[in-house]
Image 1: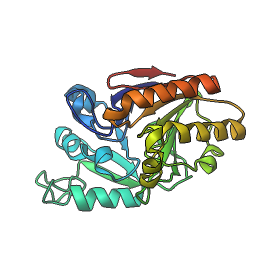
Image 2 (image 1 turned 90 degrees about the horizontal axis):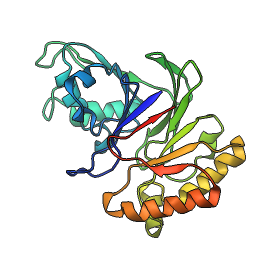
Image 3 (image 1 turned 90 degrees about the vertical axis):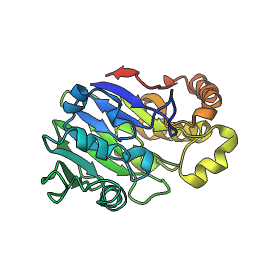
Length: 256
């Protein structure tokens, strides 16, 4: 399993891109910077998973649809997230409804497929299970993605504290987790449904207590202006818990 990170932040700039990564060139997870790769690389993507309906996670779905209008790409998300995509972005005014044959293309180029939490699906050969997480938007989920040979990751999407029920149902080798704010903004993180290093540490300790092991951990969705603080605090967690934990940046790859 090769995970290529296209965007790992929650604010876009010359050097930072919105959250999106691709598994084995086939399965895209979130679409904040999905079209930042070449047209050829986009064309190998067969399905897209959306964790929730906030703009930084789905903003490039219409661009991707326009660039790949010669075929149909499946988009998987909860019904709430798909409704947001259809009614607020691909509404026929801001962008065409690429999920309908009434668009200017005369055909649908996206197939919007609802997912049910805790109901595993086989998507392009991967076992994918969505789990509800605690974020400010209803219908927000994380995804466990597993290969037939046993490699697996779990992506939290945007989430606040309280993941113990999620940990019970997953067994990933790699945890890709939201850590948006530094510790000094812990209250802001909790109010907006995000983690900071301190709350992440608590969640990881719960994971170890429930599962009896620690996965490799990488952090995404950082505010760029707080990244140095977050990185320092993440390194402290690694030392305290004696685990492999790091921040992942745009263009980096992880291989399982």
